[in-house]
Length: 607
Image (cartoon, rainbow, N blue to C red; front, side):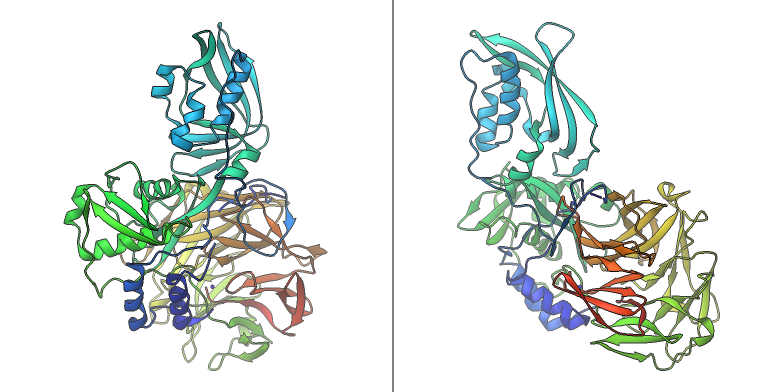
């Protein structure tokens, strides 16, 4: 197997803590598996002023693409730390070096970007050194060997390719045994072999990648500019990191987020100078001159977007925006509030108590007043972020109902093996058919669910989902992404797709997904944070280990075994994980499971 605190006050508290640089939040886990609404206006206005000046420091960068690697027992969402990242000194070519040694030496030197890859360029002929563009991307290999080509002085570097990092830091992973052949031509220069023809980019071994590259989180906005949506990239840790981050932000979101998120920066915005200098802790971001025509609102959104992205490099304390070397004035704007990072959920969970919907909080359970659901024998309930609308399935999973205290229950969907419902913060509840009849998802607008007419609904059938057996589908707490589990038998794909919406928030499509894992059989998933999910096999037989998959780590993190695991639920972070068994509910404390909540079934936090 490889590979949020409660209510508006909590959201404001989280945002304040973030703006003060006191909270570190955290995409890459193993490929083989291996809010509430608005907060207090006064707080948010204060935050706008704080973020216009302060950059968050010492907060860990998030990443965004789970990859292959062994599963290990772990306590949380941690990114691999670069070792000797600032002190890597590759060797220059030695006199009389063989052709093989020149090739291997060149690619080893490509692990250091110091002085524009100065050492690596020593292995190239003068013309090749001038034209070689290292920044176009990096190939990361498990093993490599030099092979002779068809003609004299032609060679091929044959790689067992592990990862592919493009020029924007987006990682694509490859299974073991994926070969990539990199052609080169050598020539003698003053009696020494040098590389005279080669493709752009660098090639490095996997262990060097793990030492030299770190995950950093870019942020984009949901279309309402309410939430900051993470987009994890991988860059060499060093003096060029801030420049790489800004260039990637300006280039736009990763493919799985395109259409689901927006940027404050207009298309085509570029750096006026090919660097982002950091002077006395201030990152000076000089952009193309047309931004002088930007509005105050847009400027604040741009500043916020770069501020939270540049918090990871420890030397950055604040950000200054310039356009054509002219400092942009940042007049106050009451209309601009900092986006919510890592949105939270209320502390209580909806559940089932003796065939009635219940509320479970602080080890106590009580029935939802004003609702009688006994005749429906409910299962898999969900509750909206506004905490006043519920959805649940009947015991046979053949009907989806929506309910609200004091209002009539309403059936909104029938079928076979329906998916457990999930609310997004925009007020839509999602479900669909699993099994062989799957391949589509349906969302219902809860705002008009209880009138005489059926609620507005949208059915999505993306090409990549057709014919798939969908096991679970859960919306992220920013509403821009959906976690989908597909597969059958012992194999499950864990995917994250972007949710494309109309201007009024109506879902209208899903992006091509980002694979998080592909391997072990899992049946339920839950969001732990904006960059981490929990998946598990909830069949109830034997002992199963829930698994954490992170967008910012190569390694899946396996939790302690649970005997008879029947369900999972997650609140705000890894310290807020619950599992259901035949004997009741248990919470994760440290690396053990503490029993509580006898009689509580199918608990689920808002969403």
